[in-house]
Image 1 (cartoon, rainbow, N blue to C red):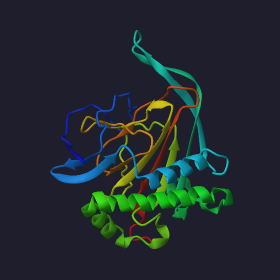
Image 2 (cartoon, helix red, strand yellow; image 1 turned 120 degrees about the vertical axis):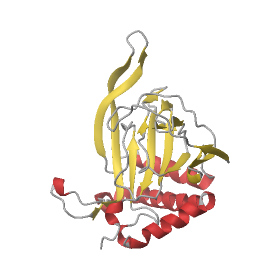
Image 3 (cartoon, rainbow, N blue to C red; image 1 turned 90 degrees about the vertical axis):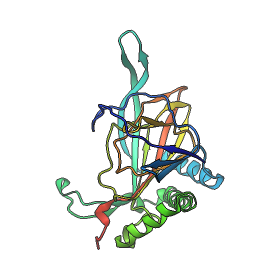
Length: 264
């Protein structure tokens, strides 16, 4: 696999800023290094078993079987060169679904941790099983490609009660359908651990991860997988632009929350 050394650059992006469209400049299988240490990797296509699980999870998420939090937002319709602004049309359906553990949220009058209510839905069980198997396969891939990171994450999880786990190295999962996230850092994650982002993309461009600290835009194509420490840097998702009717981008994400470290 290609080695990419991530070198910090100067930029003016801030948390909450909209992530603009950038052409991907990371488009090959690679391992990311920062300060001489491997911190993540990107595969343009996962092993066949993982692709099949991702296809199943994606199909189930898009069906009526899985409860979702719905949003309706305007759809990007290209860039107006004369005015220098993005054009929009209609409204596009956006939704997300959380699995696994949900941290306490006192500001929402829920001062206790819980498990996603989706786990109680009989119709969602195929989706949940596919996502759980996909998370475990992702862990095996991390062990194979980044063995030191795998062992580090195992140690980080020694203080996490098994009842809060989703697979072995994560606490939670979220699936984001057609959602382009503004710039943010995953400050709630366990420092030193990595996230997994699996992409399902159909008849669309964009929806790529941009990391302004390194000037990197990772071309997350269909059935690709990105393993990265999302707590480490500011990052956002570029606009999702359908190239044909019905085009979409869906991300299947596994992540480790520090709220569950030491929690009974």
